Image (cartoon, rainbow, N blue to C red; front, side, top):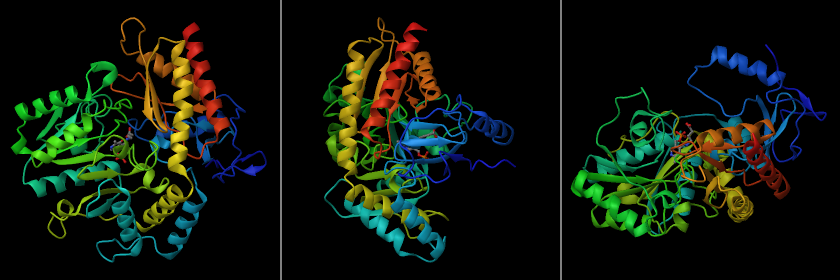
Length: 458
Ligand code: PLZ
């Protein structure tokens, strides 16, 4: 058995957090030999369907970097897909996890309740949008939160149908695969899928050219004609779509959908699993987009890297289920709750909401400047530290997926973790930890610029 606990710079590389040297440092090609060794073991031992973006063996992370087993230090522009917003191994999270683990690791909240779970519910009820009585329930993953939001909405409305949107991503379980739009890689061959799921057109300003009101009218017409308001339990929407391409709907789209839901007794669920917890420069993206959802699903950024998810919303809807109707063995695990309380404290006391907005200003400024001289960058969009560029054929606007993949791979080889997304696979998304420093952020974007330039001449 190989140990990956190697020393980098004389310090034990297994200690992460903000004290980790904040630098891009390449000491081997990516992957280096130790990473390659792990990737070989992965290929032999882990199911082929579980992919990876960066071919490295991570041993430590913190601030704005991920360090690998060979001692390479990569700038992190992905946050483990929008999870480590408070920074990896945040000291408050580490301390809270250690303290809670030493106290008790599990009782099952449905067997013996404990304070951490209740305190997280109280915090969520306070922080999520909407000035009305709220309640919460905790789960393990974003998909599980979405599943439960649908269960709750159906129980409350006594209606079957659920409407999701083009480009939506809501998870990989059976019901959430049905809600997710994209076949490859998420759905192909994995059906049959849950019934009573319908799809409406999304506002996608770069590609549909519609105002928010026009796009909403189109979506509402599809729902009314093809589903029927009286049959519809819930409309579920990501205020900014994540996996689908960081699509920010046109102004007015979300409020119009929301008004229609209210007028028709339909529960509006905002899936803020990716956009929530300071990511967009407000605690939740809904706040900036004029949306007050009935229910909101959260996960990812909530607990600094520990698995935790939640459904929060109007008390009368949340209370619709009979006692015992909601739960799960691990939902609201005490260690995950301790991590969430520490993360929420960090969001609220360390200026991370403001930091997300500032990071967004830097990223949008730099990326728009790149777009000025490069017609392959069709669109620059996003809010706060949730920003993306859509790469296209300059003449036809056809999605340039191969280019996006090549640029992302080049960035990783140069020590910058960059993720792709989008229905057409042609979007590069940037979602760094909110603890990344300006110098590192600029250096990361410099590498993106050179990768784009290198692909132009390749
Ligand atoms: N809703 C809006 O973004 C997860 C998916 C990564 P889980 N997005 C990352 C992958 O390829 O599996 C996500 C999301 C939104 C729900 C989910 C699902 O959250 O915690 O991955 O189940």
